[in-house]
Length: 321
Picture (cartoon, one colour):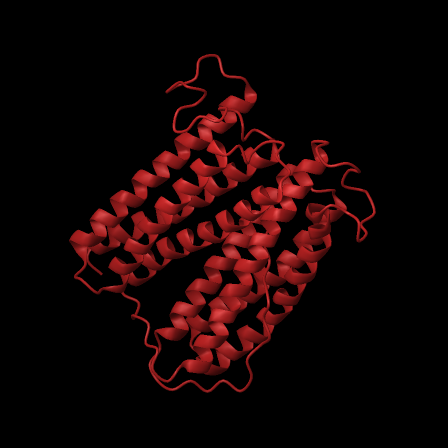
């Protein structure tokens, strides 16, 4: 790899790391109830370009908008650089284009949440659905940026011929991960609203069939996350059986370990009654689990040959909050 490509790869991974920080800060905005810090104004903050004498909520929300704006500029730079460095059809170029599309969608969703006041103490199901979709798009965004770095480093492009069963297994894993990720975002919203007193009962209340839907997610999400965490062990075994190379073995067990670890992090989150810092740790590892799964899939699909998969794991979801 020459110096130009090495610099691009480093910049792409920098984008991944920076976007993870932006994601965590966005979760902090939600967890502290600061989403309405700038009112229902966007892109201005309470009608101002730079707020004067901001309170804590306004400062938290405004800083998130600034960091999100920087993330947008970084992805634009990544796309322009990729278009100049790689020929049409190169997988790194395609991944950079996808990252730009998802970044635009990310910005539009963020703006809609503010303009339609789906922030702060809003406990509507519309907000819950919006946060779930927001989380799915976020996963697609960081996955695309990671693939940009992956393919730019010289990794082979995906080859789908003869890999129907493997492809189906990977799609099931990715869809399941997105489902549990979105359920985790909704669960975290419910935890926040309970702690803020918007929903009655508090985080220690018993849960029954008459509980608010956001409270019911505190049972549904762990069940989904546990099922997928266990399914990832089977996925890791299948991946290694198909391609026992060191790279695949490492990514397979990293993926399985993070997913299973998420089960214990989720349990710890419940035991500690969902403090903000624990929610952020749980979210970070959910994002890392997604990235590991994406790179594992890219590695398997980049390997030529006919796939021999004896049994595909049953996957209906995956961890994240």
